[in-house]
Every structure is written in structure tokens, then in C-alpha cells.
Length: 290
Image 1: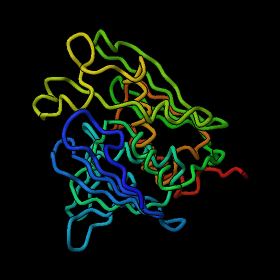
Image 2 (image 1 turned 90 degrees about the vertical axis):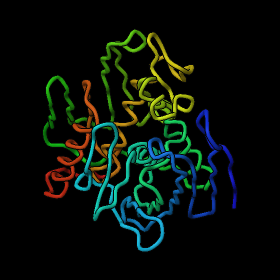
Image 3 (image 1 turned 180 degrees about the horizontal axis):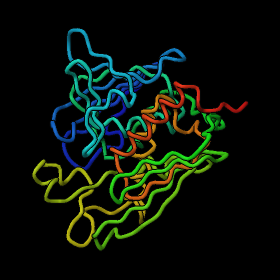
Image 4 (image 1 turned 45 degrees about the horizontal axis):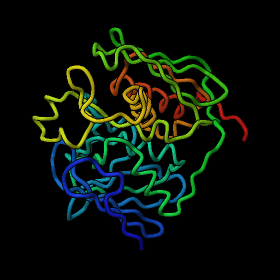
């Protein structure tokens, strides 16, 4: 058993604690909004199990599959729910699992949200690696027969048939440090190029939550912390998109498609994941041989 202290931690609060023990990894850290210390245990599951969250502290947990049909909220993050149980901010963990090639996991959580860590997905990848879980990269195999479009106002997310998986995002924020930026990622690139990108938000909002020293905040003309990449905000949007697409019920890197997002967010991402799940269930997606 290996105990890791301060695994890619945020800037403030108690250092997160991580434990690695063969087929399971455990992580304890604070929630973004609840400010609770939350423990998460991730176990490898049998093939076909999918990613399932077991939510609850004591008694019988509520099992919630990581699927679009169980999404109950998408305003600022993705919230899963079932039988009165709720779990917020699942997208960063789902992105990490997808990037590492993990599709079958049982994730026990004793709080109302996944710990934020430093706002990226990199600390989950570190834990998976420390556990000795092999990173798997398989060729994309699920084929789309035609483009899929999700639109709301000036926001657009489209899936285009392609010969491999990729995501592209156009961000357009009225802020001098962000403005208009475009970035893309595909499975041939380093996963850390998106996994290391941290979430961000307004400084005033973060002060209200008491987390201004722990996460990246937007100031009047820049950021509260040095960025890891000049375009870190748009890279984080790519990370969110990958995590949200995992709610289709399959690793999104399995799709032979280019996902292009123009200013979209969790709402359209989840709509796309739902439509992909429906196509797969109806047998309307092709499967190429590997």
C-alpha cells in the first residue's frame, strides 16, 4: 500500500491524501462548494460494468451509472442524480478515466461532489499510474453515419464522422486575458495537454465561496495564478468536453468522430452524449474491426 500526501493539491486548505492499494485507489480532498472533506475510492470493475458512482456515507449507497440519462443539472458542472442522491462535478474524473482508457470502475463517494483537487484532472492520472493501472489506447472503432448537431442560441456542438477521435473548442469571452481562442486535441497527443488544464471562474465568485486561494480566478485584467499554458482556459473546455462525452456510456475516444464546440458547455455536451447513447442503443452506429 502506498500513501501519497498532497497529490497535485490546490493552493490552500489541508493537503489531500491519496492511497494506492492494487485494485483500488483512494483520495480525500475538499469539495468545491460544500467545503467538506470528501473521500473517494475507485475500484476496477469487470468488463461491461461501465463507470458507476456509489453515493452515500453509511448504510446502502445509491448506485448511479455515469450516463446522460442520470444527469439532473448542467448549469456550472455536471450533476448526476438518482433516488434523491446527488453528485456534482463528475466531469473531471470522467475525463481522466477516458484519457487513461478506463471504462469499468466502481467509484464510492461519501459526499455530494467529487473533490476538486487543483481544478484539473491530472491528479487522477497520477493516482491511476501509481496504482499500476496500465494506460490503454485502442483505435477508435465506433462510426457515425452522419453529422450530429446540438445547438442553443449562439452555442454549437457538432460531431462529424472521421477516421479518428478529436475534439476542438472555440472560446469567446469578453475578457482581455481570454478573448477568442481555438484549440484542438486528439488521441495521438499527450493527454497532459488537456488533463493539466485547470478550471477557472470569476474572482468575486470564488471569494464568496472562500476558494480564491485554491483555484484559478479571473481578475480584471488577468488571472490570480500563473497559467500552465497560455491558453489554459480553452484547454480546460476540451477536458470538460471529453468528460461530458463519457456520459454516452462508452469511452469517447472510441468514436471515429471530430467533435467541434463553438462556445458550448455542459448542457449541449450532455445532449450530445445522450444522442450518441441512443444511436448506440438503437444499433445505428457502425463498429469497425480493430
